[in-house]
Length: 566
Image 1: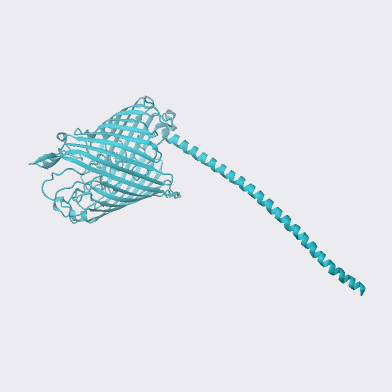
Image 2 (image 1 turned 30 degrees about the vertical axis):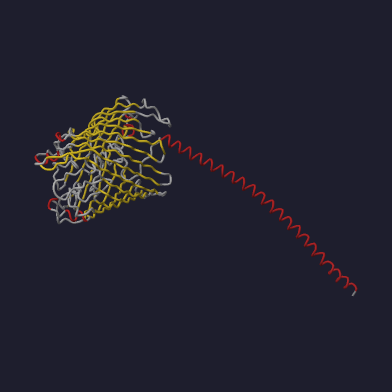
């Protein structure tokens, strides 16, 4: 009994001691845990500071690498920034189908392995067109012409410097068409010389170097010339058209596209094309110009100021634009004196964000004769005209490189009184020697009497069986700037009263381009045109000599194969 009491007392005493021991050990455990956490936090803080410092160093180095790459690219490309606006990429000099001999298949022969002074080019293009109700013609018809064009080029450079020379020939034909080929130099110009010039070329000139160390070369050419300038709307080779604009005279250039500034000047006469005989210099016209490029102000802006002068001596006019000799009243109407001054400023550029822009304004002034009638002859009137346009685009950062853009362009028209002789000043924009393709894939619009907004989409689809495919599509709305002036590309439709309105029509187009191999490429396109009220009503005016019952829409499909010899 006594023993049991002692055991019971011992248990009662042991329990508090055990609890106290457990509490004390727990306290020490919690203290150790707090110390460990504090140490861990201190270590993490130290590591975070080190990580941040390291991240900052990495960012700084990446920026240095990017800046170095940017500087290297600028050194390689100079100040030049390629324009992205739709259809304004001008043809290179020499043309793109031309290559150095040692960069062609001739390099496989020892004799040509080191020949870098010889440029060679051979191009054959065949385009089948299907045109249903072509509004360029006065009547409704289905036309299926086959347009054939052959070009050849040979040029010598560097080996005889400063003397260089080049010759380019072209043969343009149309088969299987429903219209006469006797006088249609838009499609036909058999076996003629596009270029044949001598050049003095100085790689280093008195104009020194730019800030990047690039030489500012100087060259001057004399002879038969064909080239493109600005956005191709005023001076172009007309790469789409089956025939090509050419000139004869002198052209000089200071600088290169790599330089911060460049200056071009020319004094030429247009060459009159003939379908089946050798072309001749048009002695009735003189064309002068100065074009500047200023790229040094900002990497995001290229400025192009320019001035042109076109003079025409009416007494020397003999042919129309198709090479047909003029007689009688037609000759009298064409034999007018003109002096047209053209001054403009273009600005374009691209940003790293993907945005790009291209804008221009052109002013024309001067004087010209206005033919009244055989009995009244001509009177001299002032010429006042203008044109402007702007495009804004955005290229997405995507493997397909999609670019969307919007354009708005205007070229003034000539207001005409509803009745009687027209004695008013001339207000129609003179399009000089540009090309019409950016305005209309149907070839319906020229740079005169027009107002048009346009939407474009361009992309490069990535498909396994084809490489470097390019697709573009556009939608355009066309309105006449002046309802009383003509639609020249549309068979000269006109309503002097203006009652037919300004609505010319709408157009949608699609084009797919892809290379077959390094020597062949294919181009497929389609365009649909919906005629507006102006067309629907003015075709019924008897004086327009147009098919009054023709349909109010047209379709144009083409497929074009290009083959290269080198």
